[in-house]
Length: 278
Image (cartoon, rainbow, N blue to C red; front, side, top):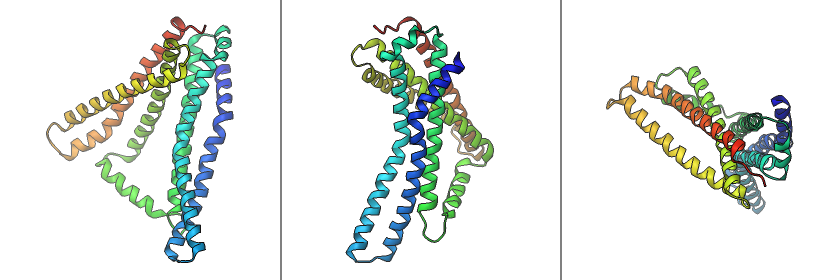
């Protein structure tokens, strides 16, 4: 049954989010072309009114495009939250909970599909950023390879001798754990909002999410500070820097998955025992 639910949720989100995740790189490509043109016009330093108007137009287009690309993952999360709310706590929710389905299967389907599409949206955002930076910041060559060199040097300084491949894997897992935490927290927030409010369920869910996210951010910051303090132990040696660089993301992974599990259990309990759609 989980497979059928997941197929339905993935298809529902695909109709909404596929144009978004494909549109962001397309906008980024147009932005890169406009940015190259803006740089070329700036180098020319022409006082021709047509050149000045074209420069202002391309600059405005670049600004709007960058804002759109940055907003794309946020919009994706909003659509996922709306899908979760509408399919469970609006009129559609009456039908969902009258079907012979297990509560944890319903919740698992929503969380898995949400995490998958958030990860896809994040990849689309990163690809869009790479397109703008690599293609749009040079006029001499097709790709700005200097950016890669700068990032490589910066990574070496930040890793403090830690193996780059292992660190990359850890950071990817940490990023996924952050998305899992995001979706489970959103699910719990919307569920609580639907329980405590009858007229403004979605708004209450947003308020609950803000409170939960603020509390988790404070807790995460405190844990990270204490961990870093314990790792250095008063000494700023190279080994301590390497240890902290490798271990801090692992602490984040444990933290994210731990809170995600707590949010999942709480959400599943509330959906089974406290939810009232009347």
